Length: 310
Image (cartoon, rainbow, N blue to C red; front, top):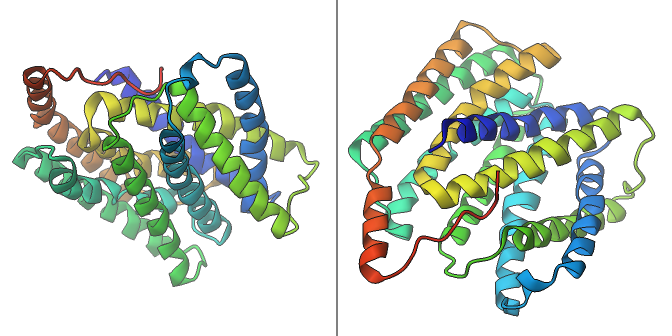
């Protein structure tokens, strides 16, 4: 995997937690998410109406499948992250809880996708979870004032993203990047607008910080993090892309400490080192890409291109 692509993905995905923190002080979660996706969806739909070629061969069920993927990977995942942060969970801790996603995805990759997970990869996955646990305990010891049940909310988002990942991986229909991004964002715009209107929270605040957070989230998180997630998924498989998720927790913890004064100490630094080691082990122990390419060649099926461009 291109190392620069991986670094860009980690930074952009981590920026989503920071952006959520930036907007948390000026508006509710549904307000932020509504205005993050509504203008973007309008622009993407207008572009799609002009360039219709990519949509011609898509059946209604293909569009419906993409809408479901968008509901899980954007609406379900982001709503839980934003709510957890607004209820008092630090941005670093939210990312740490999401850090168990690689183990869940790695455990399910074999039976659901028939992807081989080597012993070295399992070692790396378990080591990565250990790194996440180290940083989580250090962060929890500092105390955030959040109720215990609030820490369960990010787990719901984690499972939502895992479900979207497997739903996409099992799809046999190639969907153009512009099409899938348009469907995902339009679906999220409808869902979050409905939630904001029903909650009486559709009117955006006038503070400049709110719109700065929206611009941050659209540019870095949506186009950067979300787009690179699916790109790396299609190029390198579920195990690799989710292993990179181990790095979100320590990177976000460092970023949160610098931006918001959140706790960062020796345990966090040690957890970052453990996470980096886990990524190296998993990437060096991967044999699934070669096996998948060999099987595709033997059966006459070409590997599908990446979903999103860099």
